[in-house]
Length: 227
Image (cartoon, rainbow, N blue to C red):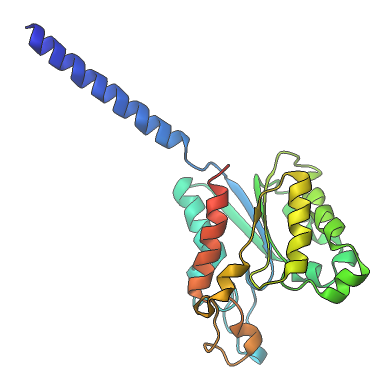
């Protein structure tokens, strides 16, 4: 009788430990519900037949589900079925960051996302940085979204191409303000991560291939999982 009692007790302890392990696993799930991704043509580009681009998603990806935005969106939804991922191409900010009309982003700010991924850098020119403080402007963009949402989590992703000057501004802003940086330029050093040879237009071809888009998504996702 005592042996049976001990055996039953051991089984109950095993069930209890398994339940605790499963509960801990559930607690470790990513809980972001309202995600915003701000980027440029790598994030989203409308069809542009003049340059040989006919997609309506992240430039050079072979289909919508292959760009980094939609890869991430699928992952967020796997973690939380009601997660919503909004995104916007703000390449015009990069081109003229010193004179950007922030009111164009009011509708996105008012969504009060719980996570914002800043995926901008490629279109910031040296000429623009020679005359204006990109670091101050980048921080201004971040503060704009924090105005009515001070607890929003942030991830700052640098350039897909090697742009050390822009990367330095972004990394400095991150270091001074405690924002997590993600450096991805090494991805483009492997040309199979770009779409070279797939498109006649070199501007399109320099964008990430499906493989490159996946690598970008993986780099960002590793940072997301740290929250």
